[in-house]
Image 1 (cartoon, rainbow, N blue to C red):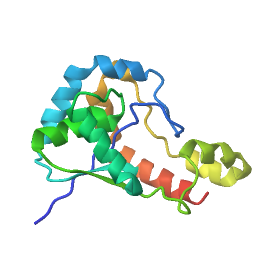
Image 2 (image 1 turned 120 degrees about the vertical axis):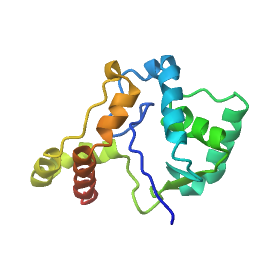
Image 3 (image 1 turned 45 degrees about the vertical axis):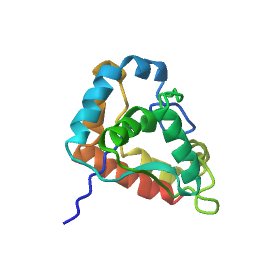
Image 4 (image 1 turned 180 degrees about the vertical axis):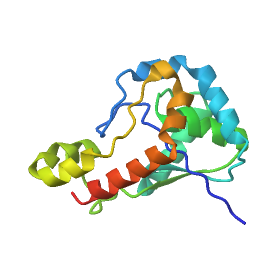
Length: 166
């Protein structure tokens, strides 16, 4: 029997998204905690790791991974901080799975949110689903645990289903 584990995370590097981490530079000082997280995740023994990265750019992701293995890639991105160390430890592939392809979703989340003011009823409905705010004062692990609670997961799914209507 095949099993699937999904780990919800936050973007550790700012981008044009719904929530942007304000102090991304702090991630670089949290390597001990990130190592513990990778160790805990490795106990699940994944054989493949899928990440939010455009499928059409798998070659680019492979290049980033090679650069990471050569100690030539510095980034606070969650793929670099969690996925790549886990994949290296377990010798498993990292596979791009993001659906944001031309024609499917041409705008970043932040762009869509900015346009949402035109649709007040939908905006009110979407905003009732509270997505947890990341606070690095609590550490990365505590934030990941909060992001993966049933309530947080249910709210996030409801948020994005309504968001997709835009």
